[in-house]
Image 1 (cartoon, rainbow, N blue to C red):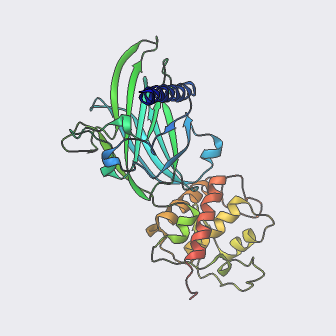
Image 2: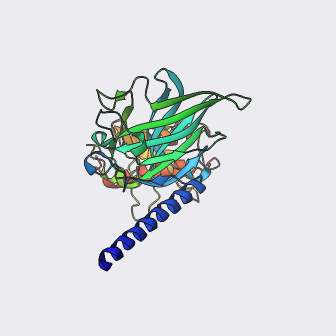
Image 3: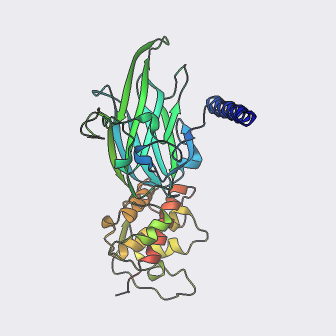
Length: 348
């Protein structure tokens, strides 16, 4: 009898301890307003499977800071946020950076503000749904709840470890606030909710989009399986003492809208220093002089576009005009350099 009594008391104590721990965790999450809970390891979902291979690295309220905007991005895909199945109130943008991380940004416009955000990124069949086929945003792996007064219109999840292709289901609860602070409306919104793919045919209007990362990371550049090749930089520029012989150019090259002949380019390559414009120009010129069909390579085409968009605003390069200080361009040139090193072809 005493043994039974002891067991009852022990169970009661454990129960109280468990409730106490749960409350403490809940309060800590609520008090830390800028922290997103990464629930993907514990979230209850269909058949107990893992929701997402990705894990949350950070979140950003508002515009990305300089440390993030200086990254090179590629494979951008943007869809509208549709509220109430009919109203375009913003957009969801998904893009990949040179560091391999995925940046998923929710943006609202006009008088709409976020009340809650729920995000799924993973295999489409694993999007949490109930027995009726309706999506369950509360079980999505990445969530954020905002408190009144609502004033956030832009929010970014930075996620690492995702596969090259996956589904994105972007849900949010929205409020419309007038200039006097009064709430005018409240709606549910979905990324691509007006015209997108339904999560299940029999469920509610929750939608998802498919995303494919073309790969703009250094590792992706070395592994891209396209049947293309390029000569190396030393083939056209006399700058490497270990490779003193270079080919005579057969033609001029156009980079950033400006045409350069061999003499122009040799003058740039032999200037002292390693300015971003010089470094990037030499790699883009190498790809073009190699007659590489870079348009067929998502990695090359994205990187070359980043570089040429910038160089087109800087005038024709020469030893006295070699601008620098653009990390995005430098990153893009590094990607091209890695791609060339792993996709060399024979010199004709």
